[in-house]
Length: 281
Image 1 (cartoon, rainbow, N blue to C red):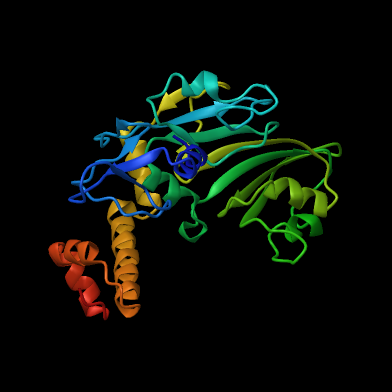
Image 2 (cartoon, rainbow, N blue to C red; image 1 turned 30 degrees about the horizontal axis):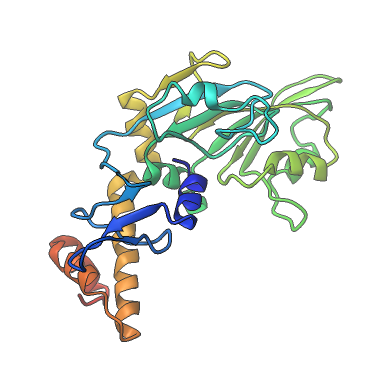
């Protein structure tokens, strides 16, 4: 399920957890940040959700004219033909505009997706631009693409790949992924963008992948992608830090979360790390 689908299911009260030691019946999941423990059972529409033991990560060379959602509200071409070929629960990691082609990642792993998309991770995303302009190295407009300004979100790097009196091919690198960032950048600089194509996300490229083709990431690619975002251990450390802050805030408010405190205490090394930073469990 996508985050939007999860949010809708939660809002409608369709995600529930059997009551634990509180008689019969069920209790709803309270909010999207509701803590779920390994021994808990979570049900969606009355059916138990099973823990996934292996995640899928794939890449698509997205064609032009495809909406980067599971269902286009206007009935136009969307991602369904490719999602139907993936394991249940796969979703797109971010989006590309309908007219933008290139690399789109898919996964069933929410933690990996979050790590790739989080601005603080600074995962480089490279794009190929075809402009109806003449731009040479040193052109003020090229320099402006990487200069911070209140008018637009700049790129991390920009370089000329090929130029003629009629058109130019550029490579732009972003380390964030704001909505229509490159298109807004081109409009702000009065540049006529003919086509936009994403060529890579971190170490993942489209090498050998034809337009419209889908392929799972190889073990080497997956290892490289995790390394680029800091590794699963770094994510787990950040999660434990967040839980420790949550537990400390609850105690300060006089409503301690005994179950969370016990869980943190049981995770020896991680708990010790946070005790050293001032958190007591």
